[in-house]
Image (cartoon, rainbow, N blue to C red; front, top):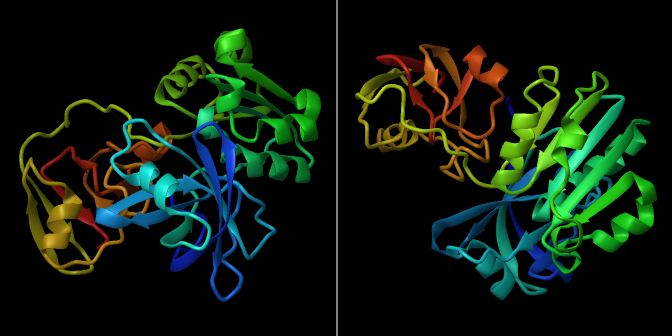
Length: 320
């Protein structure tokens, strides 16, 4: 799983700021000189580099055809460690922010029909996906859940523009999305795309277990629980390009050890959710601990995310 876009580092200005819903701000980011931004496709996200060394990932939710602007929507998290709080409190119109991207590990794969399932702010990557599906001539349906209508971003525009293809599930009115009804019978012609809080993702994963391989596509905003490492001892990492052989102790990540040895590696989230540090594996068995690779991609053992994944054997050889 390699990103489908080339990444760049930019300093962008908040050109427009609006309220998307209760606790959600929508930011339009543009270069100060008005030049075009790198192209992107539905499912892509960008990094915001914030004060205190924080980096946060946000899905692009605008129109890829608008080359001069990147749009994101940010929910103020109650337990924010400074990321969403800074966005809400400091990124007013005219403010500038360091950005890296775009990156896409959640691309829209061609299919006759799409079943989009969004929970809360997980609606953001679905907006350009809906447009892309329609442009490709595919049929689609969206099931969008949230605590209440007041908390659900882009609700009015979705209902006005798409009508019966969108089913809204405000929890205070109708309860949770009926996943058993939606996913109880596998469909050969349908791909399922889901983004939202972890309980929703886990529930969708469970119900899609009987669906064809590759039918389910998820995007996580937070790392999933992967349990204890398979291999708890120190292990060796050979860097084929750099010619170094390094020891990774149990208390450090491969990324930390590689960087301490002076090898430069692009990284961002350090949680296995953004995909920046993806590294090619030349030999050895990996204990995949990220939230991005599918079971098939993990089994292929071609790449790993060195911020969280480790060795499941005494030695790995990496293309670094």
